[in-house]
Image (cartoon, rainbow, N blue to C red):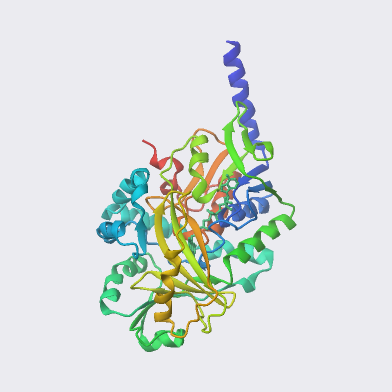
Length: 433
Ligand SMILES: Cc1cc2nc3c(=O)[nH]c(=O)nc-3n(C[C@H](O)[C@H](O)[C@H](O)COP(=O)(O)OP(=O)(O)OC[C@H]3O[C@@H](n4cnc5c(N)ncnc54)[C@H](O)[C@@H]3O)c2cc1C
């Protein structure tokens, strides 16, 4: 009887805390965590942001810098599935699976194959289309408040094709975008070169996505937002989180490399590293690291006005602070697997072919862990079992794009407002059972 009474008391305390708490701890200071922290701060919450590193040092550091308001096509499609045997055997493929990790990748891969069925592709594209096209609009108030308008420009995103076959093969993907209201312009060779005069004469076709935005440098962009968060009174703690556990009174105990902390409300935003912590908070997610690489050329000798993506080889070339960043590959391996910078170096001759005169000397390589889910959808929502625990991770190829939108949606949830979109497709519990 006494035990039951204590349990009820603890639940009541937890409920009261949940309805009155104005303190939130955001775990992870990548694009997602920083934007969640900022949106919560704008709502009047007292926010603590925790990361083992400086803000934007993870995957958000070295991406292509695009706010891709046109990215409504999931990765798992019937076309990708046909390529799986080649991915396993040919290291030069843009998508590559390391054999030795196949057993541990199997749960993710089996679900990934299931998501490539037509009805699932359609549902996942619909879900992406509910959040992606407005992603720049969701950033707009954060950018204005931080006074960093000059860091983002409406550049569009240019896909180029040297062969008629690759151009033909790309049509289904771009038709899916059009079907969701995304503007797509078809360009001939002359129109492509007007946009990007440095491109090789071998380019025959282009598909231009005018709704996309380019950041000057994704690290500087997120770092500036993090600085604004701190300047507005937010707390940033540089701590490595080792363990999370739920206390009987509903608080979350956070074990770190510098002692224990207690949080009333927690948002988990550790990107590709979220899986074990999500499990500690009660949900199993087949989250995987999809490693991507870049090589940045300090004195490229050519100019790009926007990100250009090769339709044949599926890599991108982005203008980052006046330099050229060659970005690409998707390598499925475990988070701790050794880094293979050859995958970045292999992109250099492909880029030089498209950009004649590209000077590759002094290139610096980088690798980042994309937080990938089998359905290409982020994990967004409140824990069904613990009302003061929220999840915001798994943004796949679109974490920079979706930072502002995720921040806005999570602030709605934490503040108890109805979210502006249906969050059911992003339900953290969707992979259970
Ligand atoms: C090559 C490449 C190009 C890309 N291009 C684009 C693009 O142009 N546009 C786009 O929208 N997306 C792009 N992406 C994807 C995008 O970079 C990711 O989706 C995004 O960075 C994920 O953000 P995040 O905040 O979830 O994760 P992260 O940026 O990885 O942040 C997670 C944070 O959690 C911290 N953390 C993890 N574990 C712990 C712990 N135990 N204790 C304390 N801190 C911890 C990490 O230090 C890190 O700072 C690209 C990715 C790659 C690899």
